[in-house]
Length: 194
Image (cartoon, rainbow, N blue to C red; front, side):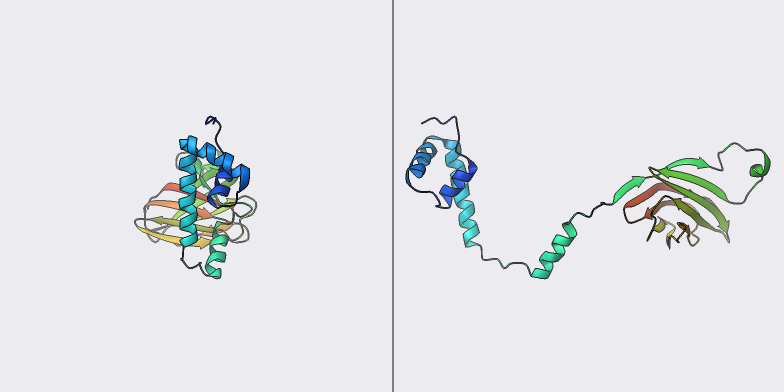
């Protein structure tokens, strides 16, 4: 018998499940007896079928199965996670002439994350840093902005103009995250100074 060509997995499964008879079964078994690879595969398939037939485990409740299916069903647009890049910081920018060159008590920072810009204003009030700003992009519905670090955390929802004002937090190192329906934008290292 030619052992260079193996029997297909489907045919071996039919043999293991006793769904094959006659001349086709005899020819296949002649090959299996001469081919160690096909013999091993048939042996494993028979063990698998025996295990499946002897399985007495209870099926998961219908509600649990539906919940699991819902969790693993892909949404039309999976959540993307993007790290924002600092593109402008008023503390390090060269002074401009005219009104823009006036000193201000707040710091402006502009971050970019693909098609989204984050315009942030940091102001110190009563010894705490207040972060306010606006997300510049289409579709910021149900968005939430959160700042968190060792010194505390705070959270705020975006309004209809994609603006927010976070409650004050002490000076320190933080991360800032903007969560929207299709994207999560993160500023992993964000230093607030008093």
